[in-house]
Amino acid sequence: MASQFLQEVLHVNRLTIEGGVPLEGSVRVHGAKNAVLPILAATILNRGVNVIHDCPDLKDVRTTMKILTHLGASVKREGSTVIVNTEGELTNHIPDALMREMRSSIFFMGAILSRCKSARISAPGGCELGPRPIDLHIKALGEMGAKIQESHGYINCEAEHLVGTNIHLAFPSVGATENVLLAAVFADGKTTVTNAAKEPEIADLAAFLNQMGADIRGAGTGVVEITGVKELHGAEHTVIPDRIVATTYLAAAAATHGNVTLTNVIPAHNTAVLSCLKDCGCSLTIGEQSVTMRAPRVLAPLDYIKTLPYPGFPTDAQSPMMAMLTVADGTSIVAETIFESRFKHVEELVRMGADIKVDGRVAVIRGVPALSGATVTAMDLRGGAALVVAGLAANGLTEISNLQYIDRGYEDIEHNLRSLGARIRRA
Ligand code: UD1
Image 1 (cartoon, rainbow, N blue to C red):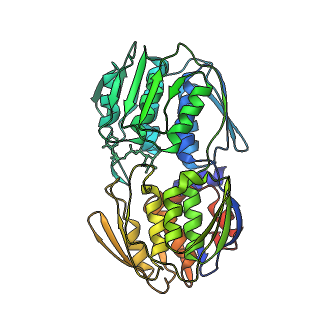
Image 2: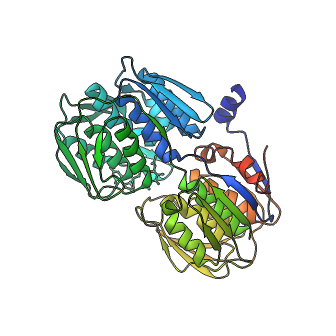
Image 3: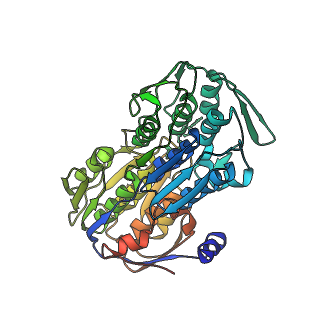
């Protein structure tokens, strides 16, 4: 534990990869980070004991557990299960230091407001993906009757009674949709969200809330209806598999011309990525909860990928799939429409011999016969994953630093990849 703490503080660890080995074998995909985080925040809505299974042991999950503890919940991990007891009194305040550890913890705003009738949290500000505005969250909660003031870097919200209403999101923001769900469970009457985000993680949050006794319909579609209830009870829930971790392992297998089976996958959540892999020439066998993929000797390029809200191609899958396309036989075009600063991995991939030109939000990737190992730095979570994919495909030795980013989204990545035959270790 102490050594993990030191590694996190000093960022001293590195991944070294001896590339060029085709990935072969089977690996289980862990629970979805982006589902666990709002579900853990939702545990404060009841006064009870909540048991959440398949919670990956990731930095952001640990930070969320710290926030819950700070708020007054009692939290413990047993293997991959996290148990949160929220029976006691809770505070309504998340300090700046904890918010800065994980800027996406903004969805605590709706949950705390529901539970405590007021919330005081530090404003999220910018992050490695560029500015992270929360105007949609604030507008939606305001429409439900919350009084919100921003001052001295803090957001103060108050609402003795939140009131159900019609909320139209100008953009289907994942976090804003989650915040409305969390705020609306106890609101007077019915809240209807239109242009809601349709991501599977939202449906999973709603499934957990409904298990607690909430009344939510339509989550996972563009129209979600939440009818306020008086109280919620403790619940037990298993988190959905992580579709971005699945994508990363598939991209790595394709880039190394491998043959892998992923278990604990919901293939329907990965339709956009699986369709791209098929277009690259990979052969896919889709099971109920598994995907087997055999990659060809020569990968075909992809004419055009554009990141979009679900069920479009996920922004989080953009960088690992781009790393794969650097070794395809031809030119691919990738357009990033969701976040401003999501091509930071490009410079590092170019150091490894990739041929990529970026113009604004569009990247043109001309496939090269082989990448060459190099010393590179992860600049964000999925960009770091892209470097792992590239390192596995490259000739020679790749050394990746700044692992604190990669560790935010992938549990034990080197162990899982080693089980597929990769020569990778943490130094
Ligand atoms: C979530 C995911 C993240 C993923 C993203 C898009 C979690 C913890 N994180 O992030 O991994 O990449 O969805 O699928 O689930 N926006 C505004 N105003 C707002 C809110 C958002 O302009 O009030 C903009 C953002 O700047 C961004 C876009 O909308 O350009 C998408 O953001 P959003 O869907 O809210 O993503 P997150 O919930 O932050």
